Image 1 (tube, rainbow, N blue to C red):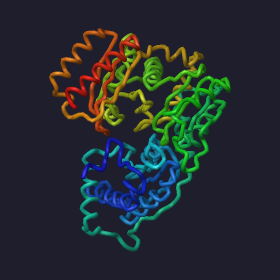
Image 2 (image 1 turned 90 degrees about the vertical axis):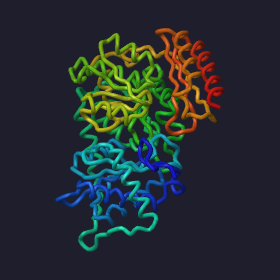
Image 3 (image 1 turned 180 degrees about the vertical axis):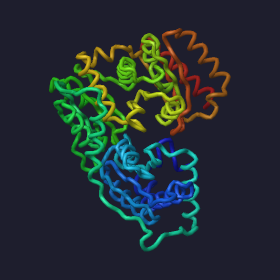
Image 4 (image 1 turned 180 degrees about the horizontal axis):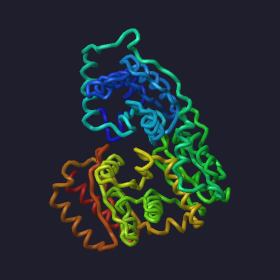
Length: 452
């Protein structure tokens, strides 16, 4: 049986892979493991539980709350809020544990469970492993040690969470957004109320799309993975910019006044230069992944900002930021972490900070984003190959060396095995799109031949 915990919690098709029984069992296991680790020592434990609007989140939330309370943990139910809101409230309320039910940008039938440690930080790998181990032991029949009487957990609604989180977002902005018109695509997800409210309180004129979740329409043709609707709305309303979230609102992509996409690399570029100017870019460094566009790297070099690159995944970006004491990091997909104000990627905060930069400079987003030239990038997924040998094949190493020689300093090649699917990703960047396509196609053929 494979590991339950992936890079971002436990995910699967709700009521098939991820059942109510599993949600309850994992929650009880998490309570026991944290108690075992001393997290609850000397006080009555408290957990914050939130979810995105998926229909399955209703019964999964009930199962999680039941599991925690049955293990003696008091529960604050914050309802439908973004993942970063649950992380923030876990820290702000001094809770011992946070639980978010969401499958992020995945389609509606999926759902997931993510645990946060005290302070709102992602749970350490070793704790996740221990939770999984304890859960499996009890699934096989080992009885739980259950409190009774006054020892059981109490459950209450914490409706103040919405206002507390929005006030936090608006409070960290360096300046107001008065005079800006912003279109917000809420992906019919967890930010459908939060993001428009935060932008409005910060002074922006707000136009909304995809902000009417019904439990079934989350991420359906909208949000950060489907930008066409946002592009059209920005142009139609003559807005200064648009922001798009995913289902749990831990990411943000943007659209400029012309309707052109501004991706995570460009957002990082704009924020990095703004923070450098303000003196808040610690160690004059930004952290990103190896998938970042070469144009981003070249722009940071030109602007005197050091770039550190990690493996793909926001958890690796966050680990490097904590290790080195850096304040800004993120991914091309729109996960942006501003560690002075958030413990995880926060799409609403990212959008607000981007808009604040536009307001402060008086410059259009397109002009700000032009600090980096996004070089053509071609990505090919090669399936049905032995991805475990991608790093040890001498034939592939020679092919990559030849491709890099051909591309020179204005191109880049990356071969990597997928962490979540049985495939190898071939990524090629070049100054010319046709050259990138040609080289990528040739390398994909080599991967099939060498690893097939």
